[in-house]
Image (cartoon, rainbow, N blue to C red; front, side, top):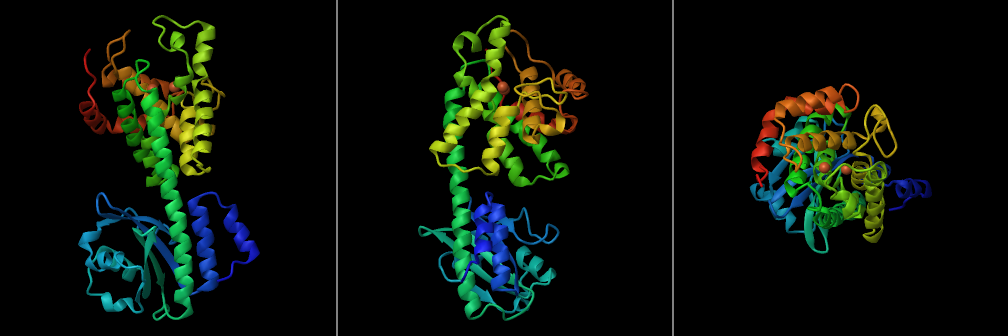
Length: 374
Ligand SMILES: [Fe+2]
Ligand SMILES: [Fe+2]
């Protein structure tokens, strides 16, 4: 296999997994023109679930948001124990097979397939599925090329998953440190994470984001106030009103949090990617307001990343509906009415509407994480 310098450069310039996989797909086209599609499914050992993860197919053709228990698909279970590819040079011989995945492939006109188990350090990570619209494609040299490309994809997917785990671990340690110094209890953080997920889930499609985005917002929303670690007790815990200087110092928790994240990224060797970007945006911009009245930069609506707008709404809603030393909890109706008023200028109207439209889900979270009365 030969990477031409220009293609190799294109590959190296990609910072996201998706960008790198697109570059791999282009390379695949050069080497094996008849292999028009590949997709990746990753395996979660804890739940025995095989989940779709990436596909080069256009969105309308892709088999997305699909998952199955590996133990329920004996042929794949067997393949997961080996490290050799499984080639089916004529998929029509499987037309009697009624699994969702096989039927979807046949309906889309795919005629042959090669399935490679992904293994890294001897542990099974999932599968790569290569497909062609022609029969008898996966023979001879093509298979050697595909095995090499498969190894490259395996390494890329492994790096991405390992990085996301490291990031989550680092964030969780930071969260454990930042929790409990002020009135924002652990339950507040849990609830506002779920509220953020509800909002993200209901508006992601309209804004062109996918499941991955929703999951990241959910994971990272609770760490929005990370920078409060750097705010002195005399200000953070002051019972009365803050002076102007103290308020200004308090506002620096956004920028300080973002600086702390940069240190975390550097120490853990985390490169710039979608996860680190979403986390940084949440920490840095969750006090920005759509009319430019927020801080630290006074950004306006579309310049504020969606993830930060979501977290702002979730955070304010939970603050209003929670008990604080200086106030009783507001009812959901009163809090929502206030958010709707704020959505005319300051908050993202789509985010507020998503919350208002899904109060059943909100109430379920409130029951799960009920605040203790004292
Ligand atoms: Fe904050
Ligand atoms: Fe908060």
